[in-house]
Structure formats: C-alpha cells, structure tokens
Image (cartoon, rainbow, N blue to C red; front, side, top):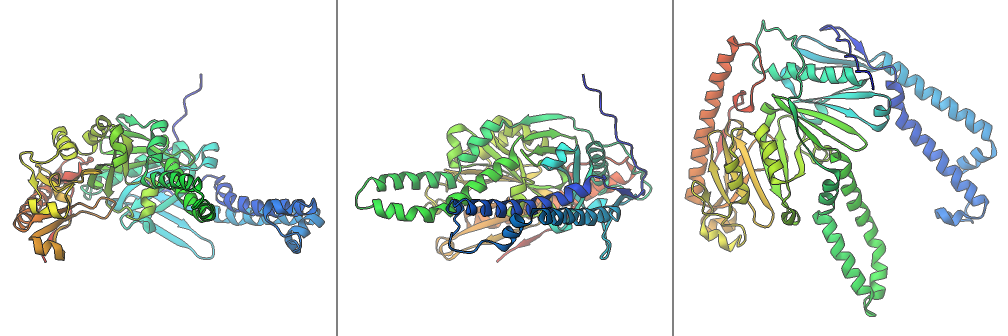
Length: 513
C-alpha cells in the first residue's frame, strides 16, 4: 500500500521561488532530441548507401553523399566529441537560464522574472486571470513535474507559463491562483487574500476513449475521404478510368496525411477527458500524451453551445463548446481544447455538465432548444418567407428569452443550441443581404466575448428582428444594472467565488444598420 503524498510546503506571499532543478533537462530535451534525430538519420542514410541500399531512402547512388554524414562515419570519435560538446553547451545555457528564472505570488499579482542578457519581468494581476491550467508533457509526467499556465485577458500572447514545478506544488499553486482570481472581481482593499485552495467538489463525468475514437472518425473530412476512396476503387475497376485513378492517387496523399494528422491531434488532445465541479468553476482534465488540467471560473464563461453534427445523430451524441473571456479565439485554442467542455457525450451527460456551468437554464429549456422542431410556445420563429432561402431549417430556427439568458437554436441536419447570459452580451446587430432585402428578412447577431461560439439567427421578419434587438437589449441592460447592485452589496460581505451572472461587465451597445 502506497504512502500518501505529503502536501508541498507553501511559500510565503511575496517570496521569490525557483523552478524545479530538472527544468533545464525538460527545456533542452526537445532541442537535443531533434539534433540527435538528424544525426542518426544522416548516419543511417550513409550506412545504407555503403551497403548499396540507398534506394530505400530515396537517395541517388550517383550523387556524392552528405559531407556531414561522411565526417560522422569517417571520424566517429570526433563526432562523439562534438556531440558531447553540443550537449554540454545546451545544458549550460539552460542551467544559466534556470538560475535567472524566478516567480512569486505577490499580494495582488503573480510575477515572473527571466533572462540573462535580455531580461523580462512579467506581471499578471489576479483580477485579469481568466483560467489556470496544469500541463504535463510525457517526459514531465515521468519525472513527476508539471507546468502552470496562467491565462490572462489578452489571449495566448499574454499567458504566463511557469515550467516546471513538482506536481504537488503545481497543483497547490494552481488552486491558490484560482482562489485569488475568483475573488479578484469583488474583493476590495482590506480583504485578506490568504485563503484555502479551491478543491473539486466531485467528478461530473468521464468520456470513454473508445467513444471518443469513434466520434473522431465520424467527421466530415474522414467521411469525404471514404467517399473518395470508394469512388477510386470503383473507377479503378473500369478500364476507361483505371489509369486516371492510379495517376491521381499520389496527389491525394498530402490531403490524406493532413486529415489524418488533424484527427489524431484531436484524439490526443481530448483523450482521457474528465470534468469535475469545483464549486466556482469546472476542472477539465484531458490528454493522452500531454496531460492538461484546466480550471475555468464560471463567471468567465461568456456563451454556451450544444451542437450535434449530422453523422452523430444516429448515435445521439453531442458536443459542448464555450467562449471564455480572455482566451484566444483562433484554431489553436480549439486544438488545445480550452473551449470544449464536452468533446462527445449523450444528451444526459450534456445536461449533467450544463447543470454545473449553466444552472439558471432549465433542462426543459435545453431540451426544447436542442430537440424542438418548431412551433413551441414562447419561441420566436423565422418568417415563413425564409422557406425560399432555407427550406430545411427555417421552421426550427428560433429564439427564446429566459430569466438570465437568451437561447437561439438553428439547423436541422446538424443541430445547434446557443445560450448567451444577458449580462455577457457585448452588442446586438441586425444585418440584411440583398436577398434578405427583397424578401423583407433580416439576421440578428448576439455578440459575446470572442470565441468559437458565434450566435446568429437568420431570416427573421424585419419587424421581428427589430423587436428582438429592442427586447434583448433592454433585458441585457437590466441584467447589468442588477449585477452592479449585487457587486456593490458584496463589498461588505466575506470574499467568495461568484457565478457568472453576478460579475461586472462593460457596457454593451445595440448596433443598427
């Protein structure tokens, strides 16, 4: 029976600390592996050429070999000496960088100092912290280390990375930063910031890797490749198209490779997916090789989307995406999984997650938003004239106001349901294309903080679209005023984590053409 791990000693507030002594090994390991891989590949090519097997690697036996590889083969002791010298230089550079790298948790911010010739001092105030995650690459996991990534307002360029720390200390630091960040919006001068770390209340669910693998394969790109492969096989059997098919196959290899790498990357990112409730946020753990643990405070979540691609409908699977304030909105964000609260799950699992992150939306409202076919009471629908532009989905496209959110549902083959907290709406916009002008239709855009969720409802009647802007705009202003009153009243209360519907937000505006 293993002994329980002792908690890491907690540093005093304002005390400068160093990273783990093995950090230089992890930082320089990638460079050394790349150099070693290049040297070994050149050596293998040279050996195969000497055996008359250069054609295996695509080499031309008539061409002279690489002088670098020839020197390695001809003078092995010199090559080993150069390799040792290179390793020593890389190790020395990383050790020096480690000695000049320090961080501290000050009373109101986290700070990082690094650099020898060119020094850098970065500071992230606690009220600007959007999320804190733990990242554990494969080598770091073997050594029991982790890096703490502090996401601040401004996206990926403004994140602060502390690498590497012992796992118990990294977990303690993450909880400490989250505790301070969660109360930074309402804590004023005189509040004691030295509080206990945030602990997870309990696991919500875990996604089986088998299901994730099937869902990753059931993607539009892989289905397209399957159709192309079947067409190629059928064409190869025909005398007229057989030669054309064989000639065109090499041109498809880069496409196949790109799609395959994209699917593998998603599987590696979302593998071992688990969600836990921390009380003031959700903790997401995911990754097959690079294990990441991200904790997102609920008051930073700006919009929710539950979507179901066409190829998942027979299996009843859904995905949950969110916009998080301060997180980057590009493709890299999606690749790291920072905006995915559930990569694939049944509808019951979707409701279990939404009960934690969006408790003010009832399960019945989510069911109507995801499964409704049109005509339900309380839902504002698209105009019947939209049948000409969207014959499949016009009846299902609709919106509904709840006490704290606005719900939008779209699509029939691939379905989407979006919820935007009224207090998080940045602006609302009405837009018309030339076909909309002819049919007296308009599209409304509800704009939260940037992210993968983009709430748009197409083909409303112009009068209904204007009423939508007026109603949602008025309710959003009322929600912001109410939150300001709640935030002001919290000044005399003990500091605590507060839900997203209670946090202050900048003024929004209604844009009209």
